[in-house]
Image 1 (tube, rainbow, N blue to C red):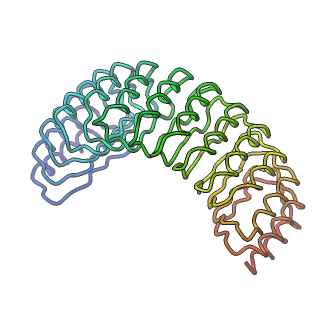
Image 2 (image 1 turned 45 degrees about the vertical axis):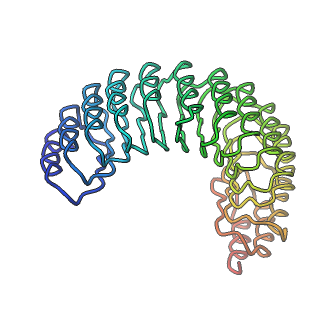
Image 3 (image 1 turned 30 degrees about the vertical axis):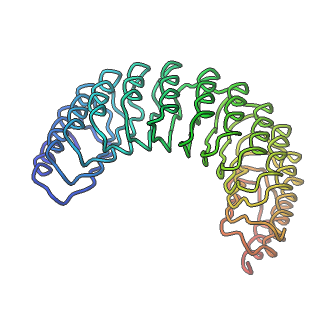
Length: 376
């Protein structure tokens, strides 16, 4: 799908009165094609969603989309990804957003937008509730601009995604300060950044007193056991977070124990993912002993050991167990661990999905599991 196709589509959109969703994925669409579509949408009154995923978009495309936003009053969701919009293109979009009150979902990911572009966009968005700026080199000043948006009284943001944005401890601290004053955000993702223990501790302390956040993604950052203890302390005090994803750190058994201390007093966590976090038998025992209303648990990629599998099996047979989805991939589970799980499954009446992919379960262990599942 290139510029020539986009020009033809634009001709259709100029007169179409029924199409509501336009998504163009993985294209070679360039600025000429985007400009044609943007011009058509200036007059189109039915399209609500526009999504373009293409690597050839430049700053010119950004300016054309900004001009469209100045005139269009029906598009509520705009998704742009994979272009080279840069700061200049982002400024063009910002000019349009400054006069647009209908955009509720805005995603401009992987678009080479730096600090200047982030500042321009966050300064003017009005009624946006879902914002994705992932995979842009936002810089410390860009994070500060996002933090300023979060504390504005007019901010409507409920969902914010900042994955792969090179956020470090200083950026994390800016977000932490903003979260302590924000009363609207429900989901935050800062996955795959460079936030260390100090930055994560600041975030955790802020979330502890936040009363609106429900979903937190902090996976694959540069964190260790101190962050685990801080997250545990957060769980002791926070009453709103229901989904916590913190895979990919170096929490170890010590960090897992810290999290367990918080989980022991936390009844609202329903989804918990602590995969690839160097947690061994002791940490697994601590966590499985205390989780209460968790329905989705991911412990994949941890060296759980036979003792850890036994602890998980004990959890499965507890009368209070609410687990429906359990993921134990890459956990070095062997025939003996498989047999423990098999015994537990024969007595469990809650689990709906189990994954033990990429382990060391032989025929004997798999036969035990199969026999157990047959009567589950």
